[in-house]
Each structure stands twice: as C-alpha cells, then as structure tokens.
Amino acid sequence: MHTVMIIVTVLQLLVGLILVAIVLFQSGKSQGLSGTIGGIADSYMSRSKAKSVDAKLARATKWVGAAFILLTVALNCMVAAGVR
Image 1 (cartoon, rainbow, N blue to C red):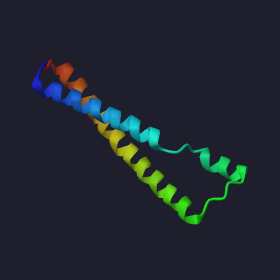
Image 2: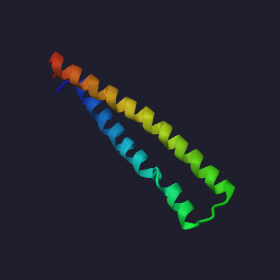
Image 3: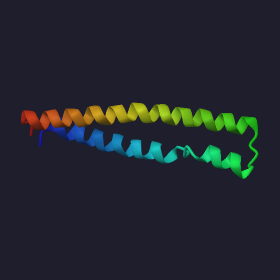
Image 4: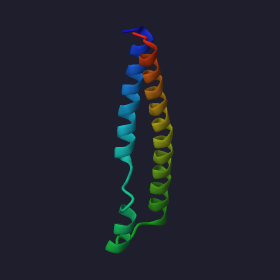
C-alpha cells in the first residue's frame, strides 16, 4: 500500500469516528416536544444553552460529514488510478 493511501485511510477512519461521536452527542429532535408535553419546565437559560450546543453540533456534523465524503471520493480515485 502506498504511504499516501495509508494516510488518507487513517484520516478517513478518524473522521468517521468523530462523525459518529458528534451524532451521538446530539439530542433527539423529539426531545423538545416530549419535554413540552410532559410538562417539564426548563429555565430560559438552559433552553437557549442547549439550543446553541445543538446548533454547534449540527454545524460540526455538516463539516465533518463533508470531510468524510471528500476522503471517500479521494480514496476511490486512488484505487481507480491504481495507487497501491
């Protein structure tokens, strides 16, 4: 295996693990609705803090997902070009 291909493969593995971790840290979309129906009273500060963290995680998911896709395309191009 070529050194560049090994590096890209390791990067893809790390980005994939980071992507899984980011998705697992996000709160579910139905959590807000169930909290409202269940009568759980949150303070304004805790709700806005949770929304800002969720917004940052959603933004990070998009960027890390894009990096994962680019690394996948790069690996496929290397394999198709015969880099070994």
